[in-house]
Image 1: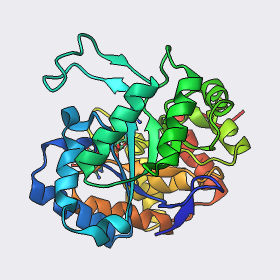
Image 2 (image 1 turned 180 degrees about the vertical axis):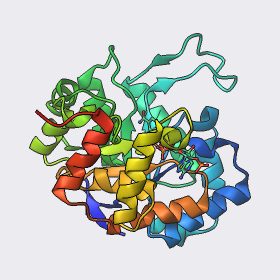
Image 3 (image 1 turned 30 degrees about the vertical axis):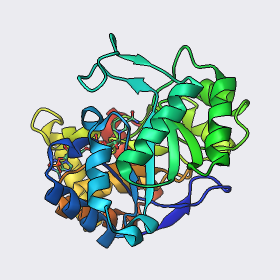
Length: 297
Ligand SMILES: NC(=O)c1ccc[n+]([C@@H]2O[C@H](COP(=O)([O-])OP(=O)(O)OC[C@H]3O[C@@H](n4cnc5c(N)ncnc54)[C@H](OP(=O)(O)O)[C@@H]3O)[C@@H](O)[C@H]2O)c1
């Protein structure tokens, strides 16, 4: 496994990250097994959000960490805040909405720390751009959380390049990532300026749904010839199609960190080995052509 900084001023994260969004229906024992498989394979970074599993995933993960301080020391915990769901746990929410107020950011971090059973977060992300976002309030919240050691680094998710630049102009510490949807078949961020602005700031993106949320593997998700061409390329690199798709992201010079969402311990191990697959430039473009159906201009 490779370990790399998201930004020159940040700390190191594992290049492949385990996302816990789909771990919501898993038992405590299964969560333990997923964490163990990830750590055994060198995946030390875990991506959470306050809302995952109707506000339950962080707590279940925290249960698995209980009493094992060395495990916490050897991992990096990422979580997000800013979305408020309609939920029996929050009867005061009358509509799904965003809240990036200072009060909510600080409250949400306190809750995440309690749920995860830790006294610091390695990285906090604003989950979605909020039309009512007040950048001065966000900057104050981030400064406070940094000062009291509750959060080491900050970033955003699903931000446009303009939104990223705007917030960065208010926040004192560097924003160390923008976590966006990114895969061979959803590659807009590599062409619409989002990736370029991150490179300008020496920031690496995190890629959510790097396997299209599993659509690549369903009968309706891909046509047969796409599958066949990807399988042929995978054969050439002696790897699986999943590894090929992750390697396509890893090849990009912005230093993308793919977040895999599997609930299968064996697939977690397999994804870790993607870092060994080195595509040629021409095969990178061949894969792009498989996705778009045409040559570049
Ligand atoms: N910031 C955001 O707004 C945002 C949004 C969405 C997600 N995320 C983050 O990104 C993470 C990953 O997202 P994701 O779960 O959509 O990622 P993904 O890795 O693209 O998709 C995971 C899905 O693909 C299936 N899959 C993987 N390999 C497979 C194979 N070889 N054959 C059949 N099915 C396969 C998995 O099923 P199995 O479980 O059976 O392996 C799972 O259902 C999430 O956990 C979350 O942390 C962030």
